Length: 353
Image (cartoon, rainbow, N blue to C red; front, side):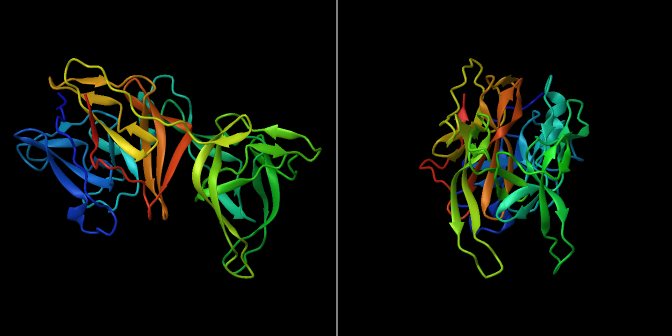
């Protein structure tokens, strides 16, 4: 039987500059005999160190632990002495922390879940190294899927030069192959972080003088900064600072969102995560109830599918609740600055009843 987590989780006062393990790891007393270890990720996000709680003893070989419900965020990969700060999150599945993609097996009629494809930088934009990406099918296996036709790709590499292999010719993807052809409506992609890029514009200007709008919901560079060239050999660098989505040919911000109240008569509790002033999402899609049972959050509630730490930014991949599982979306990624992260007056994870 799953144990209810009934206390409000208090957050740490600061994250930056604290490198001691004790500053990241916190023991949470669930009841008189049971406890769990939490790992601090940001000022507003904690994840499980283990995917179970200890009852009576601190170590699982002394007494069988109680598993957390599937779908809770945890530090991945699992290590007895985890890397701090947390760099990636996984999902608790059957009491162990597994890659978030592994939960595809628990999503009925799931669409293929595709990973970001590998890219190379060329003249300030991101090119696909090959015209395929790996996707998780609904049986949990990996399969290669072709990238969208028309994306720019590396058609030809130059010879090795000073340990750098520059691109000598650009092509476009067609039916999973990079062909020697130029786009009729050139599409420029900007790197957000390695192997993840978004469109610079939502309306493309074609060679024949017409324009073409990208599909609504396509991720785009809502805010960006341009730094000057550092030397004669390097061009200016464009940095994406905020991601939006295309709507009718314009790049617009995501709509503001706060998790709605959960209606329950059994005293069910969960936690919400503050990401920035316009976005608060569910930490996972099941609520633990006072009688030891659990309830699903409402369908389509926004949730945190995955977190990763990049050099300059926190990356939050947003999903939606579906049958008690946080289901990933292909077009909702939020980045916030590590140096100057969003602040909230109430430094507390919000408890949901």
